[in-house]
Length: 478
Image 1 (cartoon, one colour):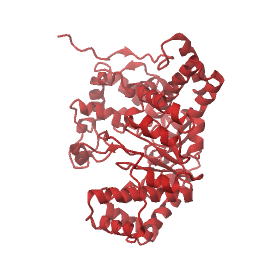
Image 2 (cartoon, rainbow, N blue to C red):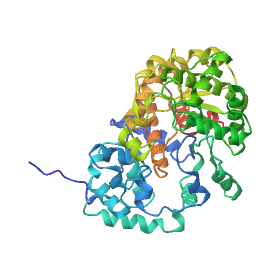
Image 3 (cartoon, helix red, strand yellow):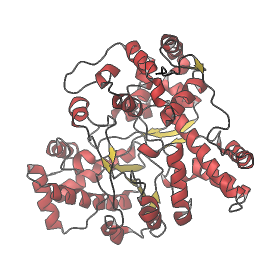
């Protein structure tokens, strides 16, 4: 049996025409379009990096902390091949011991780098390695230490502190995602520091609007303490949520984010809402009742967005934390979210009946169920003024996923019922790489339209600029 060849000691060649069409005519068009957007500033209106990084202007201590530990795309692949997260240095929540030597983790990553062939993770990583660090050796078992040391040396320099990187990477604004119970002290510190970088929070209320979220009742009690409202009552509970939204706005928030299992919405009578809240706080609530409570809260959040102007993002269709072992051992968001079939047509109808034509409300819909793009999402966005389609997300923020998104939505919803691109990442240095992939894929798709005489090239230039920058700035109110 032939021994598997690894990627060790192989030079990285990120071709200048990567992701562009193979035929020379269309590729040339894509290249011209890309030239119009490659240097546009990055807008990152939805992400999960830690605001503490920017408040303290940190230097990442080592390559493992930078590239592996925060990136569930990376350790998910390794875990799928039988490598435990504790060997990758991912901190546990149940007391199990994790590898504390970052170099040992890096060596393990390098030994298994071949697993990332053909994945967007490899594109993102090699974009950062070459473009930011100037390193052109693909990691493997024989050069793992050399690559580690080359990255480590640069991480110790002032140019690689995170604020310097933010400026160097041409990021204009970056949003974190924060609990309504967060005091946002790090965001306040950033604002008071005098640094011109724009880091803003996004309001993610799942912990206090989902009765099945661990610690829900305790969280609602804390919500009451923070706002001086009696959150045991329905009106007090809503007032408390509205107050926290205003607090987030005071520190720059322009959006909310809702990670519900489904897109279900409801428009219940107040007495029903009061009953459901009481059951939720007591813990004596059925699964069906919990779903109805979440459904009502999406409608309530839409009403609050109409009042306070925060753009509403809905991220349904994910069976979150599917692996019990990962969830118990390492907590949420460790790469075990799995796509589910998702209904939008019936699920959103109560919310759309109430708010669907409001001029001052924007609701951005994401999905992990690609089958819903052309069947449900594009037609809905093609009718209701409040709806916009979020970009391909999680499993599909990849070249093929992005291209399928454009092919299945554009003919029905057009480009201007979408919101451009957001990177949705916890790994800071993947931000410019992800945006570059999105810009290349969009230019490739637009080049096809030009080459087949469905779009003039000057129009394609405008669309490319809108998808890369203008739509996100407009829709997210940045």
